[in-house]
Length: 478
Image (cartoon, rainbow, N blue to C red):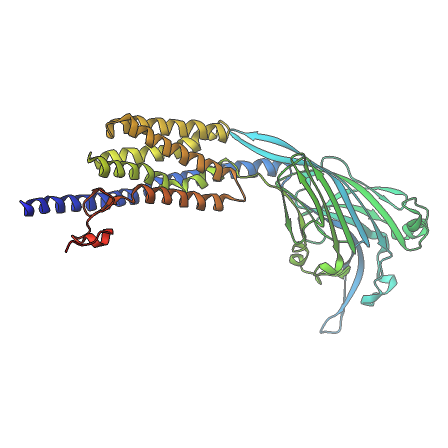
């Protein structure tokens, strides 16, 4: 009889071990549908990005203001090997002493199908001072300089972003900008204001740009306004000896990027204000150069600005939620198994499988419905539907509504934990780690009295392990 009982107990132990192995295999199997859902989320996100790129491209693109720069053509002479002299026109570039850019960035929404994209309209005022250009550093003769063809240029990545005519105010004169090909080679397009430097020199000092400027020979003040459309980001090049930029916007989630961060900034629900101050000493190029002496990469490396970042969007939240998917599949499996061990009621692997599929459908609902409703409402509806379905099914599997309500309580707490983690951008990792610790603690507390060798609850606070009662805290009988 003792051998028979021992054999039955050993059979139960092996049955429990096999069930645990089977649950582990099922968890590995569910990695496949979870990975498929993750691929679906990434695919839908790529479709959104393509739609966003098309809208932003037609609206004006990511704008970078590369300017102003003063371009002065000159005659270059090169002596060839055969002794002949070759002459051609080259360009010299001069940067302003000071540049000040201030303005506002207003945002708007555009839609393509089910996708919504944020674009902006920037009203900017650009002011500054130029000094008299000097080509003597390169030993270029005065008669070889084409002062009458000098021009002020501003290069832009996408000229379609300009919504109004641009007029240069230069030392008491109004000069309209015209379109041109990118002179420096940063971008394909530019706006150009021609300056007849001889007439500029004759009229110097007659402007009203400022007392200090108007009374100083060889110092020229300028200003112009830009009404610019774009999307995603607005950036600048620090081309002045001193460059100051001040932006205000109602956008509440900016991301400051590039080579320089704001020296001062203010963020709030009403928007942001940011100020940049950059010296020429902070860059990797000087205030003047000849064509070919400065690489375009050096200029682009100094770009700074602001990105109108969309805080954790729907697809990113869905993708982050799928990363917790295997944990949410594990929870109903674990509850089924614990009730199975405690009550002796057997749960078929197919029933485990259906519960896991219900959890996977939660993520599919989250992705599909959130494309039409807000993420918060979608999350609430999908989680309630999943909890209700698993609870209803558990009442039959576990043969008691009391046990089904325990399942519902655990799932509700888990989905609430996931929602808090998804809503938090800065503390998601901390919240996730604490949540996993709480779950593990709960499992350890609930299973602390289970004797896994006899697969049943402890009695009288002790259990036998491998036939040795001393391991359970009892003293062996003499």
